[in-house]
Amino acid sequence: MTEPRRTTSQANHEAIVTLRDLLDERICRVMAVITANKELEVSRHEAIDAKLKAAEEVLEARLILLNELRGDVLMKPEYTAQHEKLTGEFNNMTKLFQADISHLKEWRANQEGKASHGSVMMAGAIAVLGLVLSAVALIHELLST
Image: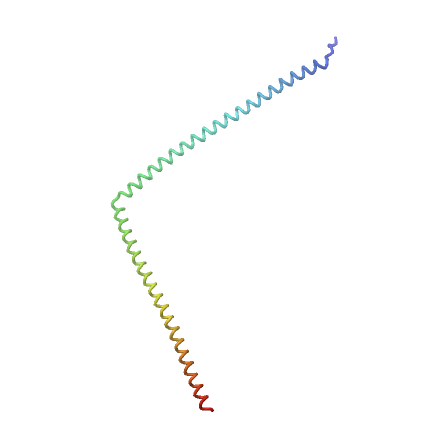
């Protein structure tokens, strides 16, 4: 027997229901994927936080040990004596350097004075030479006339 003919409105209604079911199924799948990704990200962040906390604890323990070591070294009498000795030597060297610097400044001033004195003497010699030449030229002029 033949099936009864469907009307266009009945076919559209069945297509709409089927499309709605299809969309609902796809949306559920997408939501499941999003939820799974979110759970994965949360677990990753928890793992990272746990590793960071462990690293911070190790670093803190290391810093505590280093501070104890520093305190032990600074409290040793050998270190204190050596530190005072080196400080004294450093102060002595600083005084020597300051004395050397002051001697160099005096030497430079002395050299500048000598150069200035040499310039004055040279100018005086040139002036005397000029006077002598002028006197010779004057005498020569007087005698030749």
